[in-house]
Amino acid sequence: MTPTFSVYGHVGDGKLHYNVLVPAGVDRLEFTRRIESSLSLQLYDTAAALGGAFIGRPF
Figure 1 (cartoon, one colour):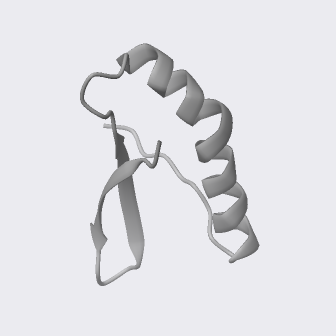
Figure 2: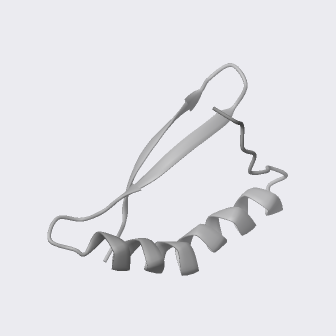
Figure 3: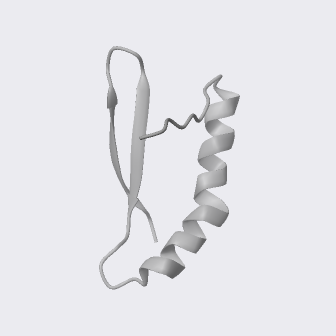
């Protein structure tokens, strides 16, 4: 199954945000577990390899 992304960001500072959309008919919790155990790690590694970082900010 190929994930669908919703990507948006800030053009001025280069920050990107993404959401991985749950496909119709797929259990949301199971899908989330799969994404967190594989795709998320690949995205983190790719960002780090390119000199990027993941940051959080309080709301």
